[in-house]
Image 1: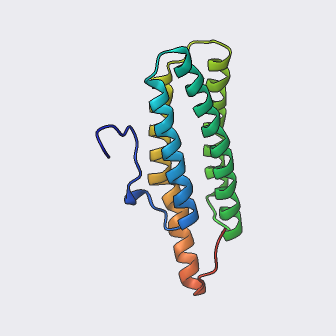
Image 2: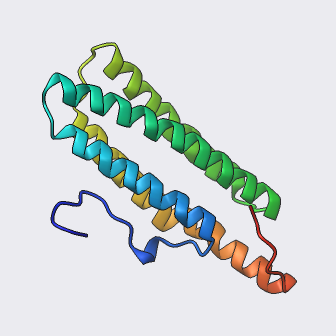
Image 3: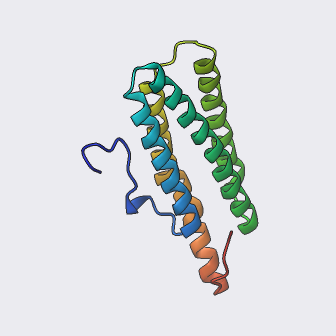
Length: 148
């Protein structure tokens, strides 16, 4: 991670599924952009932060849907718990976005730090579980069929 990077991709976050890893990298890039938007305290900075928030929310929705479809396709037994984690995260983020847009006090830097912590923990721990499950399932089946 460079000095100016708030959050950066590391190979240890890989779940071993190229499309999911690419999506995780994009989530990390969007979080980095959101952090950069925090650094501007002007009205333009606020506008940029709002746009970056919306970009992140839209991408999170797309990514979680892709992950859940994959887990359903492979019969991952941890899907209900994983889906609950996604739902709780989305609820919190949407509440913060709503509060920000209605002028309620949210501290952008605190919001972005929460995102960083949640995303990295989720990728490094929770998502690794289905990555291992996929690898084991494919090994048992002797398949190299695309999953997504």
